[in-house]
Length: 167
Image (tube, rainbow, N blue to C red; front, side, top):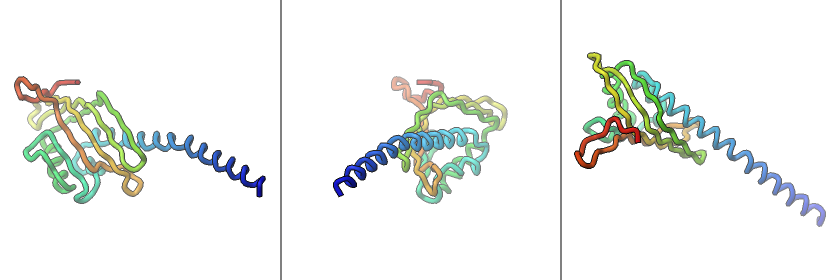
């Protein structure tokens, strides 16, 4: 019995050490999966395509910079907002100026600064640099957005949105 106890302790320590080494690799996989969601969402060409990356039902909220309203709760309201946005634009392109992702394996967030260009339905150019923060939850093995906040900085002197700020 005295010889077995040290062996069990050594095996337990080795098991914990192996688990601790494997943990960052798993976190890296989740961070990459969230990064992939962000890039695929930015490349979406329709509301239906974009909605693949949001939670279903009422478990999702979007604070959009367009509006009113400013808040869309539930997948149905978000679909309507996205359809309105996609209907009025063509040749959409998004470039990530900054993207930071963190996760604990169940919840994660992605915060980014993105530069967006497009053309209106009548061909006028649109260019906006905005901030986006997404909160994601792993649902049935897939990362889904449960909360999204999109905004632009405000010039405090004029009270107007700064649509071109890169900071």
